[in-house]
Amino acid sequence: MGFRKLEEADLKGKRALVRVDFNVPMEGGKVSDDTRLRAALPTIHALSVRGAKVVLLAHFDRPKGKRVPEMSLRPLVKPLSALLEQPVAFADDCIGPDAAKVVGKLEDGGVALLENVRFHRGEEADDQRFTQELAKLGDLYVNDAFSVAHRSSASIVGLASELPAYAGLAMQLELEMLEAALGNPKKPVLGIVGGSKVSTKLDLLNNLVRKLDRLAIGGGMANTFLAAQGHQVGASMCEHDLADTAREIIASAEKAGCELLLPIDVVTAEAVEPGIATNIRSLDQVQASDRILDAGPRTVERLLAAMDASKTLIWNGPLGVFEVPPFDAGTVAAAKHAGELAKLGRIIAVAGGGDTVSALNHAGVAGEFTFVSTAGGAFLEWMEGKELPGVAALQQG
Image (tube, rainbow, N blue to C red):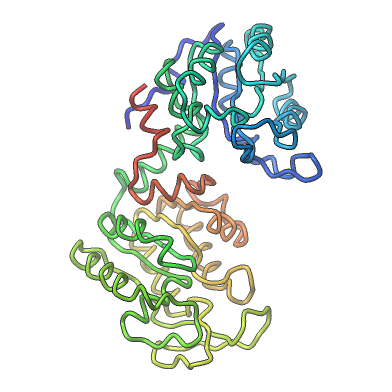
């Protein structure tokens, strides 16, 4: 992957414009989850200790080009200063005299946070004039926000063409891990795709069947594939209108030599309620009132065996309704086994997507995986085989 790394940059005394993702959860005007602030710390530290003047660019929420006081980044200054253990200056705008004044006062190693870039329409429009105003504040550009790399915005794409562009440490790690998972993986490669609907993951499935050795499909979307094969799915979530599409994906997998692992048994109940009576059904036993809510034990056992036979695992989406026990059993068992294999160095295990991260945290194994991406939309688009504008810009920069 051709992108410049921070280790190659001459940083002493240089103004580094750093795109970070500080779109953090807020409650009562305060940061309620500082995960994204913490993710940026290694890059900020690396720049600061080498004498760069660190100028942070970020967005918050969707002000749509207007100044919305509730969407200001100012409340992030105090928690970020505490995490960095040094003061963080703040500018009331990201361009113009106020921003220039704050950046101009920075000493080598100092850090400043500029106001929400989305307060300007030019940000999401990737407007050249806005980009050039941002570029006046820096000598080099660093993108450390993979989670917004699927956006064609001024602070993500435009700046990479105006200034020498580098990947931040978090961005570099993400790109290296994704390359290890799908770009140039150790084979055999196993994929797990779950979630509720096939319709939201058509591009993903069509891309993966061409790249994987095995693909396990779980969650509600597996029901659509089972129905397409003529199995009864009772009152389960199922996109019956996508039966032809499911059959096309099955045929594509067969043509590409990708083994599809669909459920061979299921856990059913008549409602999604904690502690409700459940049944383990083989595929020919599903009743009209049954709702399929988790993978069955034989399905899970086969999946664990597939993990044992693989060198790389890429996972997106749970196997069942993991938020409501006991329908978390399949996801938890698979997650724990994958975590154990990764911990032993027997598999490279990469996972991503909002529900996936929640599921791995629920199973208590997120820290055992080789890499867990919190990037959401960018991670999914990358898995779909789409070019990410923010990554492409770094490769050209």
